[in-house]
Image 1 (cartoon, rainbow, N blue to C red):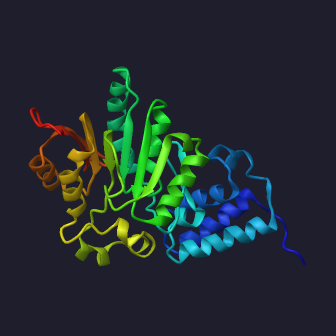
Image 2 (tube, one colour):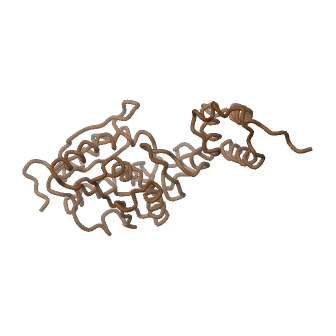
Image 3 (tube, one colour):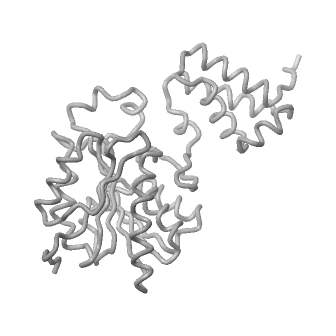
Length: 295
């Protein structure tokens, strides 16, 4: 006999039970994210359509996805996309998942963009190690006067960032280049942003399985002390930053002092320190030190 129809509520209950048996940290939340994402339903619709039937094909698709989650695959990798600052961004093997803590870098950078616009200029952004394009695309979405360039060493990431720009209606203001940091960059920019790899090489093996096995190594490994990318950015940014420009970087929770020291030695001063939603040091905004010229 064919399997009887299941409702959205019944499918949710089934997946929630499977996740509870698998001892996931928050089975109810993960079930809701997975089922709503696969059915393309907003949270409110999950409630209002709780008694709606789910097709056999969708039920099998949800069950297959649940098995992948129980097997350790991150939920947003299964969905293939994640929301960031109001944008839906596709993920790929060459990109990190954009995470909520990075949104505080957007919050800190936006006033600087608007300040530049207020002076009658159209800001240019450079996003180093752009990945999905999350940081630059969020800023462009919030500041229609701005344009940006995203660079990444990964060909896969460059293609994904370009796709995300087009899907979010930002393709005309966003350019992507495959580049090892600044190697293929030309011109000067009002704001340079980056969420570079910052995990010390020796710590990679100790990361959570979901990160270690599914995030690209090149986007995690920051060298012996995790700070190699910051040295590159700090030592070369002078050639690409507008005279009154800013640099914004994300870093690990215990790296504030080290990152600050690297940039100060290169002629930059802290304009703003930013904490994430958990109260941990997360990002720094730098400007040139008084009397320091980029020419």
